[in-house]
Length: 393
Image (cartoon, rainbow, N blue to C red; front, side):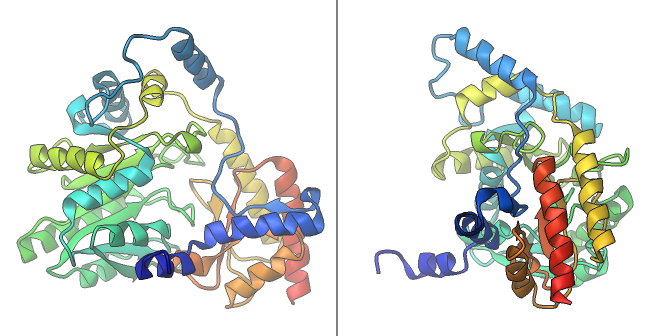
């Protein structure tokens, strides 16, 4: 076998998201592309805002000597300063540019953080349902994922989190707004979780970090106010990207930011810079750093995403599905009308609709549907979802 046993096993258990995306290719061949309505992938169909194209054109037409060379592994100082200013305004904390490290998207940021923090065998608590790649990221760096079920409302339970903490616990990963459920954690919940980690850190005599994965932070609906774990817990680290709020997933540009009051800040940041380099990321893309520097207050149309959320949610409820209405991100996570979610998702494909089984996110009996697609796809999907649930019954 040309690949390692571990790689072979990882390939065998490859992400349901990608599996369904690939199944879509076969389905299009069988039914015709116009009859397939793909809600499987969080790959925004909306183009970036016009300000992005203007800034990209400006950078291309006004080249500067050295603008494509290496820079400090942490990124351009001007970009880090711009990010720090923006998140200071958003979160009400006093970030400096030195608190920020530019990365190749949030995924790279998470790997950098975990590489720097984890010793072999350290545990990372992951509330379920979860973004499935977290498990691979933790394993990449010798850690052990400790899964903790959330409630039917998909909110982490502070008591369950407390009972899952051991002397090996190094971090808790939080993702709000959440993928796959779209739920948003309010300040009351985050404060309770912070209290649990404060008490547990003292009890075990070691720091337990919150790693906050925030790529959907600006996609919040119904005039809600976003609250970050960094607002409630000093020992917190953010990983995020511009993939969703600027519709740039293919450009792989994001950053790490540490709470300004985090303890042993200098050593942590030095560790992140080192990990950024030795993991092979080296630095975030130079051109994209220059582009996003002046786009800190630009985002896609949140109102349009809210409209699509309402359309898909109302269509699901009318068809007879049960679902928690998402407050952010661009996913719905309805119950499937059968405990075997994979079987129902397979059945759904016969009606031209692609979703992802909830078991791929650690929650059986559900499925994830993405609404970052065009209106025609949503309309076809709603029709297919209605036919599928009637056909299943």
